[in-house]
Amino acid sequence: MSIVASHALFFVLASLALVVMVLPRGGTASASEGFGWLAIAAGLGHPLALLVADGYRIDGDLTPFLAFDLIAVAALAGAAANRSPDGRAFLPLVLLAAAALAAGVQALPSRGTGIGGMLMASVLLCVVLIAAAAEGVRHARLFRESTRPLRSLALLSGMAALLWLLVILLLAGSPSPLTALQPLLEGAGLLWLLLKLMMTAVLLQLFVARRSERDERLQQALVAAANQAVTDLRVAAQAFYQLPAKALVSDQGGRILFATADARRQLGYPELAGRTLESLFVAVQPAGNQLVRGLFERPDHQAQLMQIRMSAVECRGQSYHLLQIEPLPFDFAGVRQLLVDSRSDDVHEATGLLDQHFAIGAMADGWFRLMEPVDRYAGAGLFWDKLRILSASDSEISHLEGSIASAPEAKAWLRLRSGGGLAVCVRRLLTPEQKPFYRVRLMLVDEARASGASAPCADGNGGRP
Image (cartoon, rainbow, N blue to C red; front, side):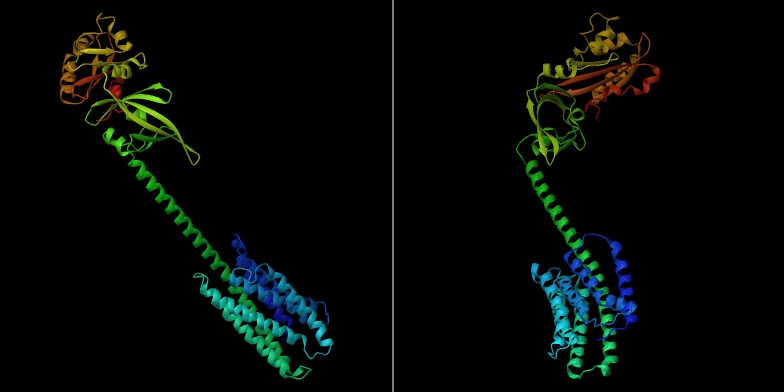
């Protein structure tokens, strides 16, 4: 086989152009790409040697440089298999075979064995190309995304093996010198370069296909892992939901994330998404180490006293709180402690409790500061009578009194006799025996702030309709 310098130059430039088109893709190289790049680089060895010899007018036999083609074809088989065909011994064996070829091409003809260097190189290349074609056919069945480039690679390797077999037959059947065969050998050289160029293009397609295949497998693995994690989470969530305990889970910021079925039944199935204890309960108060007492208003307006035991929970580096709810016996003194005694009202606010007849049961300090100038007995009597002492807005007070008799909540804004205004909010709650009692919120306002008269009821879940 003889290669013309102009053909070699075309092959080198075309190969470099193909390589430049793929290099910017980047990414992690697989075993297939490693062998593929080795095949492409080694395939340039013989044409580059020919160009250097032609450029510097160096005379000599360049057949030993076909050892690079032997390395390239062996690496081609590794690229098709996506692994070393013979494990760790693959590259040493290939290098040994290439060295043997290079040495044999020089030594055997000089010893009169009758075996020419080109004949020896042709036989070795033909055998390795057949092996590469077999690897391509075998692995084309195993990889769905890489089937087309692997089949193309197997076809090109088979065609190249036939080409080298033809060269073997020509060399074995023709007497020396081979001057008459020179045109045929040059044509075979051109076909070999074209086949190598097409192999380079197919190898680059194989890189893209293998990367797509790897990305798809990775995506499938991630989806499978995510589905497994979601399945495990659903099982855990369902198991926790059915747990025979009244428990809530909140994040570090206090937002409720989850509740067991018993807890939801105890709380009357409220909407818990994004709620906090302060917004879910009418009032909460620390009651000891990791303990909180709270007053909860069910959807039917029944008041319930509860004790909440808090425990820290760590999960995957995140901190959560497990809140265990324990219902307490209803005690009016406990309700008073939560709604009145433990509150820290501002100077312009007041909080109190009324019994079922609207008689004053308990009032915070703000109420007494408001009433002291006009009534020495601010802690006793009917609430409506006290409002009439403070304000001449009798129609507004009567409307407030009538509204709370038919609705769970009533609001009013009264003009005080001393000047300014008073925003009043009365909310009806029920004991477990369905007896009503009332929570009162008052706020001193001026006429410019009259639009904010509903503000006293916006506390805990007491402001919900």
